[in-house]
Image 1 (cartoon, each protein chain N blue to C red):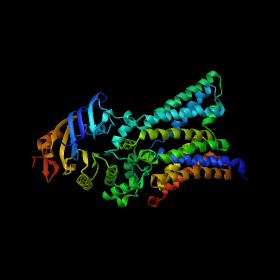
Image 2 (image 1 turned 90 degrees about the vertical axis):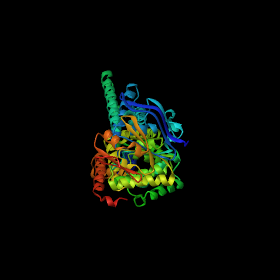
Image 3 (image 1 turned 180 degrees about the vertical axis):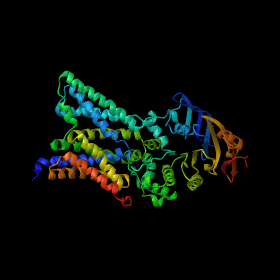
Image 4 (image 1 turned 60 degrees about the vertical axis):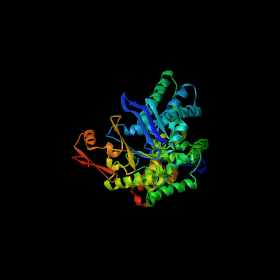
Length: 266
Length: 272
């Protein structure tokens, strides 16, 4: 059996007296691309934040990279987080942010280097390599707040990858991007996985964001797992139409997936 | 002709206050927490007020003032806004109003007990013109500690400046480093307040940093620029005030505002 990068048992998360998440069992294998999908409020981001130890569950166990997240505190939790590359949904980009693209990517090396140590030449070499690999070379000296939304996303992915993580967690990496940038980001995720075989957990709303490498989908609905399996099995026209309460048709083609208005599954 | 022996500590104090407040401003403006200065000032005032009620007087009041400011910094640093579901500025506003309430309660007790609160008031609302070498040494001490801390934890502070939540998620000990920074910030600001006055410090926190953001790029460069703009405001403002016989504090504030105005009009493509 392939080792798990993420394993959940009887997990429940509550906030303000409301159950945000109730998952009996969930497992992601090492080297796989797992997608967590579902409508707004389904509990996707709550699940991610629990995996990172940013939220404390009411009950249950979350094991990430072999460590029980709920039992970790302080330095131990920080060490686990440094093994996870996290691309958040919301990016800080206000105009008073003085950091350049290169400095933002270097944040990925900060925890690795440790307190009381400066970033070494090797650290900066890793930073520059990821900047080049993601095609950001020309922008390295630009202010992060001045580049486009798509370029900012790529910068944050480069930051996560420069951490040399064992698990990459992407929370809606194509949010607010146009079609062109969406495809470029999906292509980047596909290429990263093909080149490094890194384990990926991807949270998204849209089927179009799933890269070909994603063969495992968990569909969440109102904090519960509604379906698990391959994208073609989970996303049927009937299920998607029912989930979003609209007449929709699901198209699966060449390992990619899309939703169009009305009709039946192709 | 200016008496240089008399005015030298004033010029040194103005330059130091400008440079150290400018460096702090990089983080305070960058993280959009401008309330921090006001909050620290009132926490220090509350500490000094209760120190006075306990019988301390004169320079001794600096100790409870520092204690009040540092306790508030600790609370601010250790309270994780994400876990508390509160915005940084909401937490600051809460601490500001609570410490202000405490300070005014204490000042009320001075009247009831028939004591004078002059010492307490002058501690927090100093004037640059009365700055002496002993004040400069104190400012130099806190500024050096602050500079050393920033030097040691620069890469962590840069990550926190980008996003404290992201830094935490990336395995950076953000809460510990940020709390340490806030404690030194509280100490530096309290010492600066009692030496050069609150109004001037508020403007020196905001304006040089905001001006540096207009023309600079890169965290380290912006921080240096902010320190230089702060020092120019402090020293330049004082010299201008001396030459024109105008109030130094007001001229320093106006010089720092003018710097921000000029940089805001500069072409952003001309950033360096």
